[in-house]
Length: 316
Image 1 (cartoon, rainbow, N blue to C red):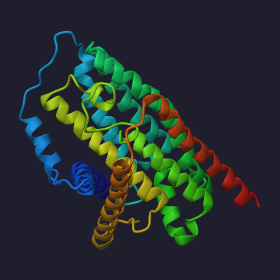
Image 2 (image 1 turned 90 degrees about the horizontal axis):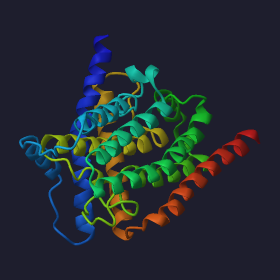
Image 3 (image 1 turned 90 degrees about the vertical axis):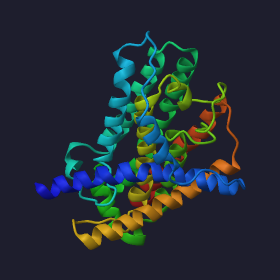
Image 4 (image 1 turned 180 degrees about the vertical axis):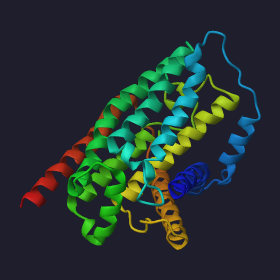
């Protein structure tokens, strides 16, 4: 029991510690590619600490939903983090949820932030909330289908079992449906984390912003919680990509050497995905909203092709 408690606490610490670092690293790589100096990789830590020292300025028109949404969203994302294997495949809470639970926990976090944007009554909040729900309606089915292609090969949607089984398969895990599902989920990760070309996390232009429009009314401690939750979600989506499709190096049992190696490997894998995401953002412009279904439908199509490829390969 004590060992399982230590695994949970250590996972929470890793998520909270690495989430701002990943965000800072992506910004630094983007600045380097654009030949700018840019902020340091530790700037997100300073920003969150600064916001935590400030009081929140709240409109008198909001209800309890506005105050509860950051906490509910943060807890939902953190709960998903206790199901997703980060440094060890055998998660204590894996029995309580699987792939479907993770997708709906992300949806729960998104729903309450969008609801809070409507609760404030601002035009920007309503615009951002409606855009977020529009993107979510396309992202969530494709996200489940892309990992189902791997889940079918293992025979379960339990993420701990998937990561442990695929890791033991070694290079045999690389297959056509495996690669198709990875590309599909990478496109989904762009939309799920609000990156270019779906959204621009650095903009405040009312015609282009989605996530920023939803949290425009937040400030101080509440904004710090929302921003940290978004950084955690980004880390967890990247971790899904790394440890579900390429889970080599993840620890199967609790040992000092195994955990040390697993932490080094996951940091490298997430950093590589972060650099790849920065390259995509630097080489792509922000797409118009009505063009986003074209991009996300590609992800859905690739997910279907991954399932069909699995049936052909295994059926043959």
